[in-house]
Length: 309
Image 1 (cartoon, helix red, strand yellow):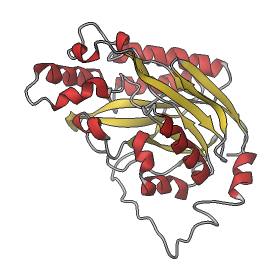
Image 2: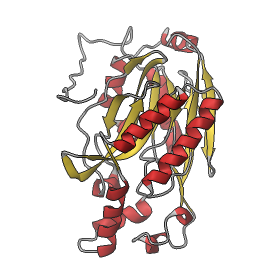
Image 3: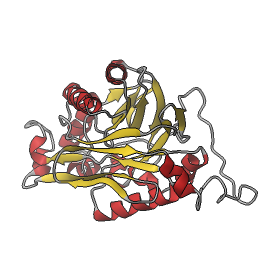
Image 4: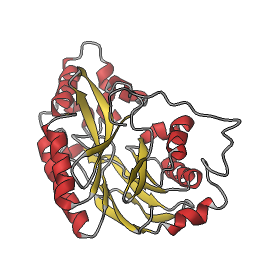
């Protein structure tokens, strides 16, 4: 990272379970962030078309519940195929506004169309899909929804704005996955999530201090009232208000907050990142540099053939 960079961390509610309308919303907020001078715009975990809240996803364990089957089929229908026209639209949005765009999506793979993946897509200002990561292990109720990732996207990508990479929600608790990013020199660490708990903020502080990188952490925000009236598991949402309260934040390499956390409302957090902060904090601790002992400890990463890293 050689030049100062303004980043936008978007805590925006999707048009729940409506892929096209959610992409429209993403386009509007990306335009807003770009107009404010952001060169990197980041959206939360599975923003397209929504994070499957535990309030209803737990019902997918019902063996023969027709509502659960219909809810999964709806999420599948509104998920984004990679490659495909909706992924191309994300590239077009990044190109139109000249930004790096990082988006959490529910992904369908044409080779395995029956499985949904929790993915993070990085599009360059040229509109290219530059990095593609799938969550390695779904958490708790998520195992009823998503398949396991395949290890792609675990190395930071060298870009004109800095080395960028990240992990999704609780895979940030996987030490080797984090170190794969550290070892590749990550400077802009994306910690996309749906975890709105207070303890998650301690996690973000730790990741920033351990990585000595800037941490951009967009969190999912959603309300029960925003679900479509004909949602098959609507009964599970009765009496509920906010299902995901957010907690988005941007942190410096010493673990201090540059913006956020933001709770209980939509908004875009901005921060101006100074590359000098990286060198200042890595003088004492560089996890893959002078504070690493590859002669004693070594990570082996299994490559994924024929895939975008």
